[in-house]
Image (cartoon, rainbow, N blue to C red):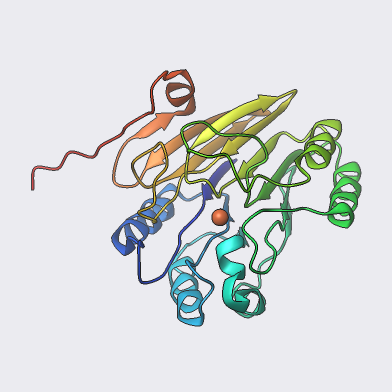
Length: 253
Ligand SMILES: [Fe+2]
């Protein structure tokens, strides 16, 4: 199973690198993934024209299974009213022995994320029904602290409850975005992967646009950071780096 994990597009007028997103869409289509998971911040401010822009780019992805979730930026300026109009995507996908669930963490005009008691209960019920599947949960905000991002903030406010539900239900893979910094951490048997930003100029601790390419074979996860128009980097390289990982794309032309 090939999963492509994209996050933090930030489509809009400022700080949005449209060229990067165009290239990323082309690269992803060439990979022919089984599923594409987009973990929010599709827009920069939740404006109508930004939703239209994000919808245009994401409609170019050629994949029969796509989960497109929202983030805190998409909920600004009543952008939460536009989500359903532009992104009628499922929150749960089940296929080929796998199940993927998107947890909504964005709240109107708030930057911090929250899953909430009722959503945690809903999530636990689904996981309980699909014990034998390869279980993936995706959400916009980060669940665990991430290095090289300056002040640690906006982490999921009920992260403890969510992490307990994840580890008790043997979730295999957790996909997060929000901090624009690729990072990964294993918690018991769950692998947590954070994505960088695919097309925002606001980098944190990893200075290139990227998305994640995750191959799953016999329950084993092989995760790579794909720099847009650049190399695929094994997550271990970043995890083992003692200094902030600076990737620069050297171009002669
Ligand atoms: Fe965000």
